[in-house]
Every structure is written in structure tokens, then in C-alpha cells.
Length: 204
Image (cartoon, rainbow, N blue to C red):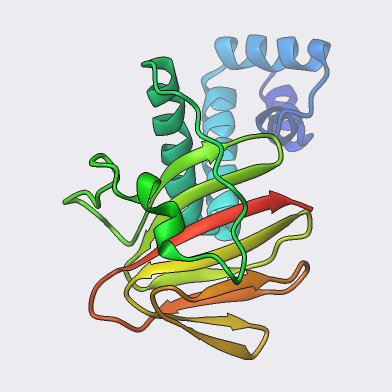
């Protein structure tokens, strides 16, 4: 039996089980063998640890913007559920001014929280074709690229530099910029205060 146990462990089925690649019959077999034999339970545990360490080697730190906009979407949904009337902001462009959006930008709940950790967003409006939000950046935003939506900015407070594949744009309050599709871009805050931006993402 000892030889059979070692052969079972050496077969690679435990690694396949941990990876989720076993058939139903193989899964039942592994579970039964692990329940019956301590050696297999230990080998299965070792295979799980090895898989975790392998995955850690490929792990990447998530973009902080993902969390910020996830939390902003949750906040927006909760506001609508609590009775807030959906707003549809007009698409802005190079001729737009900050005054055109004052009614939305002066909302008392659109303030930077005390635990601000680098990037914070509050969604004003969201439809299938467009999303408009107020975004605060402490130091900047990591490089990203959009293939299916236009991204455009209207700076409200502070200053920043937006780099579009080496083409540097110095942004200050009232300045507008639209990011071309398929272009890698990043943001670096250049002011002592967070850079506050009106952001729109529009389906291309």
C-alpha cells in the first residue's frame, strides 16, 4: 500500500486537483485518498502551498484607480437607491468653463475625505455611453491606455502634467484635454494640493 500511496502522489494528480483540473471521478478519488491516508493529506497541503507561492511570484499590485472607481460606483448606486435623482451632465469640450458645471461641483457631499490615500472619485452621472466624475489625485495616476472609450479632463483645482507617450501637457484650473484612443498616458501632480479634475469617459 505504501508503494501505491507514493505512486499516487508522484502521478501529479494532486497538483492537478489543486489547480482545479481534475475530472469529477479524479476529484472524488483525491478526496477519498486524502481522507484515508495522512501522507496524501500532507502531500496535498504541500501542493497547495507550492501553488500559492508560484502565484505570488506572478502577482501584480492592483492599480489604485481600480479600487477608487469601484468604491465610487458603489457610492453612486447607494445614492440612487436612497432617492437621488440621476443626473446627465453634458459632454464638455475645449470651450467648456468651470462655471458651466458649478451646480454639480458645489455639492456638499463632493468633498475629499480625511483618509484620502492618493486617488478618490465621486461619480456625478453614469449611463451606458458616458461616465462623469470628480477625481482627486495626490501624486498622480499610473500609465494606462483606453481602446474603447474617450477620456477627457477639465482641471478644477491644483496643477498636473499629463504625459501622452512623451507629449507633455501642463494642466491648470480651467484647462481641458482629451486623450486619444490607443495612447498610453499618465498623470503627475505638480501642485502642493491634490489636483481636482472633472473626468469624463465616453464610449467610442
